[in-house]
Image 1 (cartoon, one colour):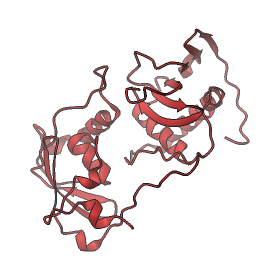
Image 2 (cartoon, rainbow, N blue to C red):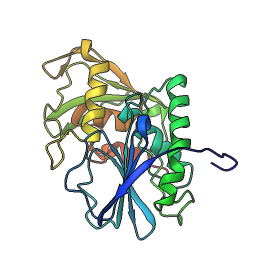
Image 3 (tube, rainbow, N blue to C red):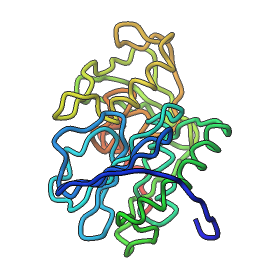
Image 4 (spheres, rainbow, N blue to C red):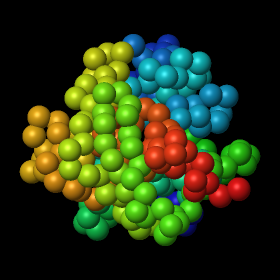
Length: 260
């Protein structure tokens, strides 16, 4: 954001528990001083506690009861919520927050340009409400995993939340889910009975492979790009998927590939 000067007109109103900024055709920014009871299922949220960003979410703030501020972005019609949320996690990851999801969405260059312009317009408002664009203190890094050619022919099985599958890690960014896999059919909901972000992403992955699916059973082999995509596709995530893929000897993919 350094070196960029941009002016955005807005109107607004405030009450004891929130400030609402109306941006016309650019949507809304709402700052809540208390956890909102009802949320828009297509809104992106930054959750702040004591001036530190502690989380991001799409369409839900269920897991953040003790935050001191909730910043909501209600996006305009030309913004795809799931795509823009993914874009936001990558933006914040650049500042050291380590909040980026492990999914890899395909976003066109044209859409990225739109999202970047929109972000440049609204980020000063978010900063005014307390969102800090600086890296927090370093926390313990996530475990890193290394692809091993020796494991390329090892069948890893998944048996979790009603899903059953055989998966091969054949290349660094290629995971083959074998035909016959049974997918968890229960889409996760928030407390407000709205589809969670993981649910939305899982449904999107399944839509991309709808020709290979029938009645939640995989008819053909498919290739996914990460362990997290595998978990999201099979059972809508919700757990550490590195621990759910198990070799014939019972060892998890994490045990076999973690960098120590």
